[in-house]
Length: 170
Image (cartoon, rainbow, N blue to C red):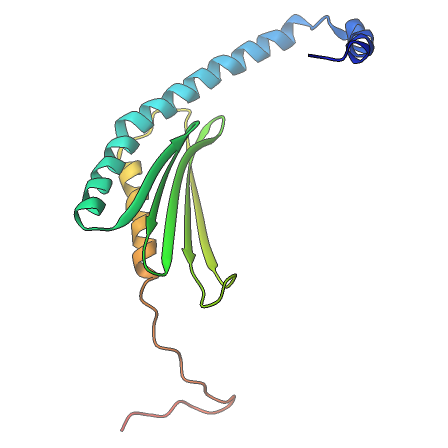
């Protein structure tokens, strides 16, 4: 409940400005109509493309004993995959009124607490038109590919003093 003295002060300041020009209200109504289209395109994309692709992936992960978690909240879907020293999270959300965003977070645990390193990638797609379903599959493959690529670390490069050439194999 609003404090009475605050409400009286606030209304005294606002009342003279309460008449909104009709053209401003028209623009607001048009923006809300466009927003409904974006929301519908996002909901259709999630239901027709993202949910089925994630469901298929979850079945594969489950059959192969890969620790994972899928959760939803608000307009977001999160897929988290845990491995021995790495975990990754893919978040799908309508982060802007007219865009769907895929956020890829891949975390490598360091030897000591706080040594973790993160690789983040973000891809956005325009919701002004319906999105093709293959985008969801492509983003899942990108996410899984990034995790798999980072699991294998190349041998460290030999240290060569400046001005010297690497030894030739004999």
